[in-house]
Image (cartoon, rainbow, N blue to C red; front, side, top):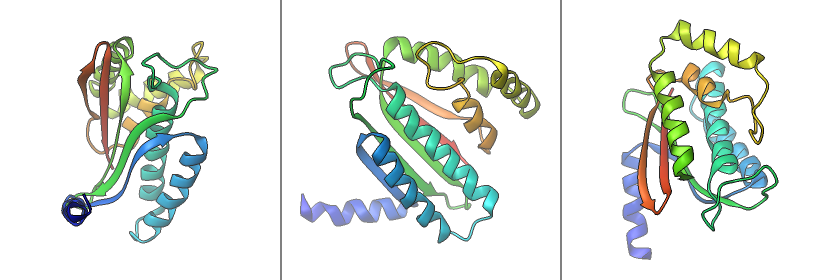
Length: 184
């Protein structure tokens, strides 16, 4: 295993990956990763606007892992659940100087259906329609057991320079691995 680590590092460098994390997620880990992301972005000489977009998308993605991942036993989250969640998050830079923020986590089949519907709708909107939907969503109360007003994907889409990329890979019974990519 140790012999291959250099190859993994080189592969990540070639892909432009500047930060990657795979493992348990809780609020303390999110806070620690946030500090690292802020420090890493300081060295990129970016505008404050670009820095804030990248950071905001990163926060939305890791919170989605924490709030909406299935539990290790395969059950969906409840509002009372304090279990560590597992996920992966990656920040990288493309050849043309855009940044990508990737995340992945396990979701239940019912979540997959809801997420696909929401993401298809968002990707079908132009910037003006997206802005209008965002303003409307800010006025709506959060759904029961929701951690927010459902603004996360809208917020990410507003900051993205491309449509949201996503996929679902069936991994077992009623669970899927949900991958999300935002380009800033």
